[in-house]
Length: 88
Image (spheres, rainbow, N blue to C red):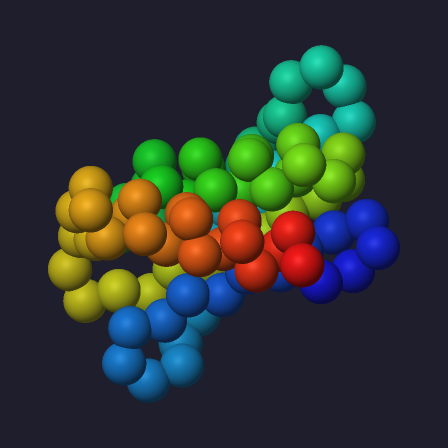
């Protein structure tokens, strides 16, 4: 966590860099770009990156390394946990 940015890395199993997206929010809508294309859960990466960038009106980089798709329930839990951790 930085004053104007977040770097969020999510790994299943060994710590690895996976699909990575960056979002910036300096205007009314966040803007995103893929740094490393995601094999799965690209929508999750974009959603969490844009949500966190909007919260701080700054930059958010999110990386996800998972063996399989997260699925809706795991995605929801991760979003809740990340949001809770960042607001502290």
